[in-house]
Image 1 (cartoon, rainbow, N blue to C red):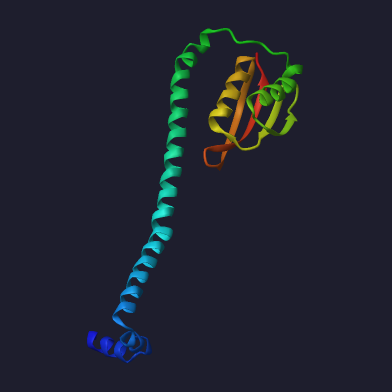
Image 2 (cartoon, rainbow, N blue to C red; image 1 turned 90 degrees about the horizontal axis):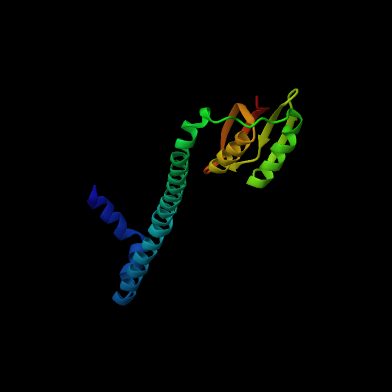
Length: 168
């Protein structure tokens, strides 16, 4: 089998041209071919792998920061039931939701009233940690989250649908 391939190669026009070239030109073509092979390896394999690794490191660091944030808030949440909750006038709920969203950098896509003292909020994609801070701010002012639906939008961002009600 290898003999047939070798004979076929020797009869090909490319092999005949190769044989006619001076040894210096052959060496230059070999070096050029090796260089092109290395460039292709770098562009097709190494560079994308490095980009993916860098993105994974960034996602890991963001998740680590979120975990640290949640761990730092855990003692506050454990004692939360013992603290009296702020009460909120149901008529002020929509204004409070929009004002705190603007303060926290959360963009409201849609806000619908759901009866007296309740609203349905759809948010544009937001960082999960930022969403948690906003919800914590709302709860501190007497707003209760009755339902929450989260969909992954992009890397480390979520689209949220929340049902909020003025506290007790």
